[in-house]
Length: 504
Ligand SMILES: [Zn+2]
Image (cartoon, rainbow, N blue to C red; front, top):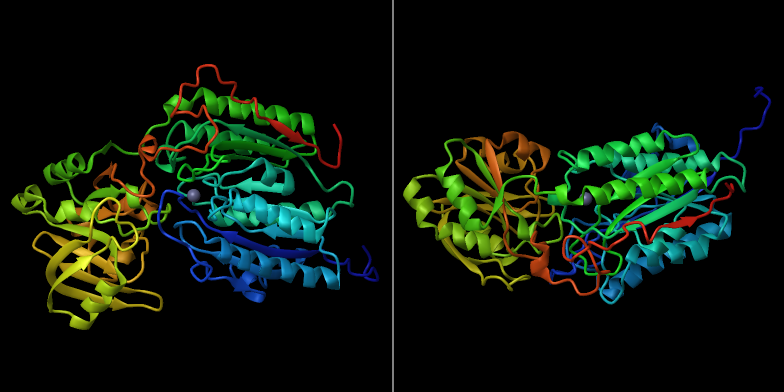
């Protein structure tokens, strides 16, 4: 290109979406306000790669429309979803009226729920497509705990997903989705759309059995970059799926996209077959037990800190977060009291309780009835009596530590995760010097995993119960592993090839 050449016009790419992981087994709601929508320029500020100076900043004219995101929870009320969707569509209509959009990044998780609607992501993708038109290329970088319906696979041109769980590659995946899009937009129209092989695999497992830190997930996911590197293949992914949504789409999915349609299909069905062959090898990431068994192990442990994952009400998977079942047992444990050990419990959300405790202030003795405001199906509010040792207000929350004879109970105004050491040290708690740390989580996030001298996963009740059979799915496809007899199942019978622009 000579210096006199005109600067090529950059493609116009809109960014929009709704990201949520929602348990349909949780009575909690996720409202539009909780999804905290970003609009316009703010949408782009969420990711550095297309912001000023970012690796993709100059590759397109990036246009933020609306992106809403919340930590996992319950489903979205239909009215709230309708509002957000209408605003996204209205924004797109306005941008399309100025000039056609060449591309669109649909920023979604993949396991959002809406009351009365299956497959929110598929519904949104179809609605968006109707506005932007067939010529616009749509790309999505998803969570591997998302569910990919046939509609979503058909409507979105470029789908990719995380390749690690815990998701240390989340940013990289979002960037890959955007980069794949601008790379394809550099091709002439009529050559941009790759073929897509979509293979639903009748497997439904919790994330705590499918961590890529261990087999068989580690070697199955290691196949993804191998397939991606093949000539004629653009991207590959394994969505292990989200089991706490009782929807027809819920199951594992393998997808491969590329210009070589035959190779995309054969690699996708091969990888799906490998996933199926190894299904019985999936097991929990840590020893599991009933809460009583796990607490007994923690009390008897010669090493500390002993971390207990209170998994059934994990707020980051979709639990309401305020199930009191475990905390009540911990506070009542004679075994713990007799051992002389102390525990940290993080956490119990209760807005009224947190405000009352904060008002009483550090040093005050309190007796509070906490939790079970949202999810009271497993246990009633729990009584916590002790002295307040910390009150830590923040912009969007209020955290209080109540010290009882055996437990430091973290009480919050709103539910939130405790994944980092700093989440504890901010409150004056030292998890490294604690005997026992109980966290509402599934598999341990890297920092907790690093500081745990030993740990176990307690199979406690709640909206994200790890014992799937206990939940009683009625709307998923059957038969489904491991809930049913699957001896006569052809695991790739549902495979579909969506042709791209380039035949063959
Ligand atoms: Zn996930």
